[in-house]
Amino acid sequence: MDSFYVIVNEFKEFAKKQGVFVKSYLEDRQKICYLQEYGKNKRSAGIKYTDAASIPEDVECVIAIGGDGTLLHASRDIIQTGLPILGINMGTLGYLAEIESSGVADALDRLIGNQFFLEDRMMIRGTTNRIEGPQIEDIALNDIVITRRGRLRVVDFNIFVNDIFLCSYRADGIIVSTPTGSTGYTLSAGGPIVSPDASLILLTAIAPHSLVSRTIVLPDNVSVTVEVCSTPESSDGGAEITFDGDTSFSIPYGERVTIAKTQEKTRFIKLNHTSFVTNLREKLK
Image (cartoon, rainbow, N blue to C red; front, top):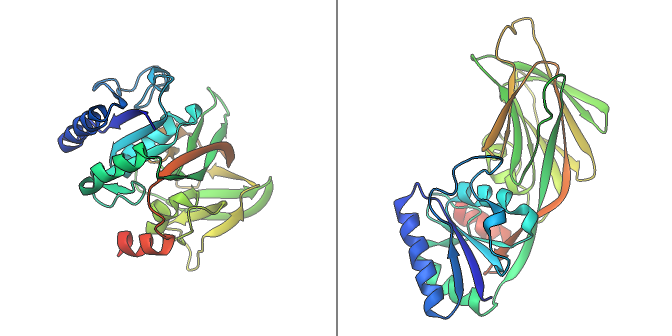
């Protein structure tokens, strides 16, 4: 590879310094490196963090420096470009960001020498069937979460698979997750850990008002519809839908959200043939 675009979490000073180092290191080796300008990742006019239109056409890969959140945001922003992405972890867990700060120079050398492989990760798209107002639509690499909004209370949800009624939950919320997201919020809610190269949809209730509740694992060719129902106690708030813990929108009672696998995929750059089991052991202890 000869041309790179670096996205940095500008709210982490040490990540900004790492971005300067990456740019300098690559340019010292006669490579092209663009560093996203600070302040350009402020949300405006449909731009979340990175304006994909500002990425030069000669760029061959994106390097995201921060933590898993930075990598998630970057992957969503650049999805239409088809560019592969490498994460450098400057956060805590760093389950998605493969490279730690101590191994940056070696990682860059391997990128320059084309010593890497690509790993595709499935994504999901959520679309609301609006009763009123504009339709909400967005994609997620990890998960789409529908939760209560307002005061502490449970919400009733009806779940449909391919428009066929599956079950009802009274819970704090519903997580619809990809295999990549199985080590995120779904894990905290008691869901299973799934190999990220799988292609499945996971459905997990958050703190359900039930003695028995299990994650439902579905094939990737189905659509899941979540209906937000009012309860006798419902008098305010409605619910909220969140995509990858990032963009969020309020939705009223009676709203339905349909979630399905999307054709877009995130392409991760992998430098090590570390097994899923080894990574799981090291990252999650």
